[in-house]
Amino acid sequence: SGTPSLDGQVANAPGLTSTASTGLAIPQDAGTASSSIISSLIGDNPYFQAGFGLMGVGVGLTVLRQGLVFGTTALRRRLLVSLEVNNKDRAYEWFLAWLAHNAQSAAPTSRRTESWLRSHQLSVETAVEQRSNGSSSVLFRLVAGPGTHWFKYGGAWMQMKRERETRSMQLMSGTPWETVTVTTLSRDRHLFSKLLAEARDLALRGQEGKLVIRTAWGIEWKPFGQPRRKRPLHSVVLDTGVSEKVEQDVNAFLQRRQWYADRGIPYRRGYLLHGPPGSGKTSYIQALAGSLSYDICLLNLSERGLGDDKLNHLLSNAPERSIILIEDVDAAFNKRMQTSEDGYQSSVTFSGFLNALDGVASGEERIIFMTTNHFGSLDPALIRPGRVDLSVLVDNASPVQARTLFTRFYGGSESIRPELIEPMGRQVEEFTVKEMSNGREISMAALQGLFIRNNAQDAVKTLPELFVDRRT
Ligand code: ADP
Image 1 (tube, rainbow, N blue to C red):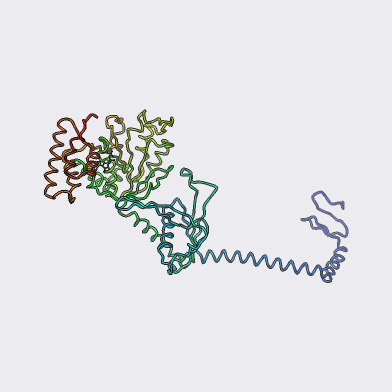
Image 2: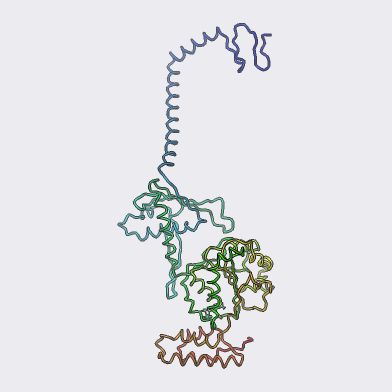
């Protein structure tokens, strides 16, 4: 008894008060003695007083600092509003282009958004602009580089922070992640939607009347080159009724979304244009996409690194309002083409391709156009309905096509009297009939080449030399 037990409890020790919970024991007599020592230390010792004073100041400052941090965070939360856009979103490019456009178009005296140009971090974006006569020029556009920039929009100052993630890359495309954060006062938050709409309209205005071609970039569809000028549909001269047939089918399909949905049928349609090279298959599909204001997603099945999985992903994730174009669909699965010169083997298998075409039914609309020069070598499994719903022959020039192309080319030209165009056109038609009955033909591309190089008289004269045997 009287000795502290192991768990710290002390029992019946004279002169000791015990605090059972902590096991701390203070001698009572010692208590009065020590409190007087402490009070004399605190009361009389100047060092101790100074120490307490300093501590007080320190605590005060810390509290103040914490308060400030807390206060600014709260203020930021309440007063500021941020908009984050990352480079996976289409608005990202639009926004940077919009900022660059406004900075460059603003007159030097105008203070609209030029302020950020004084910034020290700029990036360059090179653009090739194609003019209507086919010539092109290269432009450099300065866009805000990674870093912080300020600009004024609609009377409000905005801070724009462009950040690049250096440690991780976007999975398939290999481009670094980037984000732009625009911050402004909370009361100006309505400006964000206005700003984004302006950026979108600017981007879309640049594409108006243009055809955007996309190619697969990893597992994503990225624009390939600058948007091209649309080709008028009537400038591609197909045989009587062919163009109308395809156009009607596509239009009917586009109007039947609900019909497909009601029946639970995947909303997709496949087209195959087959025929000899230079007959206008690709040109027609591009012109058709342009007339529908659709983009083209160009898919090359023999592309390196394209495997069944990626193909499946690409086919089921094409951007809205786009036509997927697969050219020379026979070539990808033909032994000769499958191994390229350096021994690379295309990794898309035929069954993988069929699976991707059939895909898991999604509500998304999908239009695929395929072309081939060798209809006969296609596997019948590919051309069955559901995969190819409409298959049309786009052949070498028929007599009517030859005449129409002739009159289209020389109509309005000064080198030929207007009244001569029709009779000469008929001459071209009759000549084509005669040659075809002898098994000789001419491609539309060859006719186009002839008409580009010659005036009408010379073209008619040179025409016979260009017909070739059907079999060659
Ligand atoms: P394909 O895809 O059938 O091989 P393209 O569409 O690539 O043929 O045509 C090659 C070139 O020939 C293009 O410059 C195109 O303008 C011209 N051409 C081919 N067929 C036609 C046609 N039916 N009408 C007008 N131009 C044509």
